[in-house]
Length: 203
Image 1 (cartoon, rainbow, N blue to C red):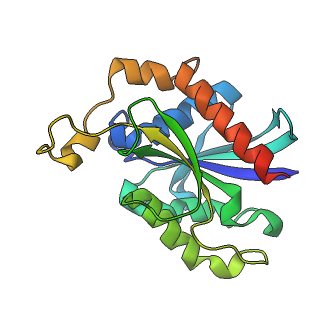
Image 2 (image 1 turned 60 degrees about the vertical axis):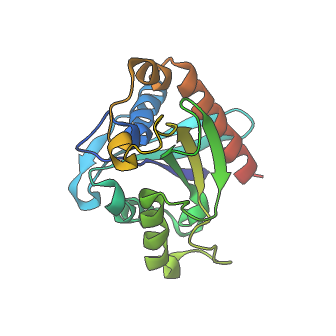
């Protein structure tokens, strides 16, 4: 059976800020798929697994991961869980990251495979942590950055002089929270993107 790790990036102490939209969406995804997330200290994360039916692929085991860490250090928590996967699924290509994106308009959903972190410190941490466990990847060995990302648009500050750090730590609006909530159109778009990634990867 195909298996994927889906992780929501964010700053856990700031749960409904723009920078934590990946974790907002992960929680909504857990609700939609009826996955119970439990805290596991050894992984510094909340996680839960379930077999779900993906149209076009069939049964897929998904493990949802929400690190209890700051954004810049979230990578080790994700690879800690990945190390528990069977050898054939213990690769970056079995990982899908939900991340905020300044480069996309608010409410946008955009999937991407591999490539640089584009200045995103959470993604940079994941790439670095993948490098630290590269010897455990199945062969042929993929590059450390060869994982999937679903970029969730948060836009940029209206005033160019505004501090980006302050902006990303600002609260999501009610419209944004409703958009990404279970039953919201944004979550439906995320699920469609996930299904597209899994179907393509399973070919």
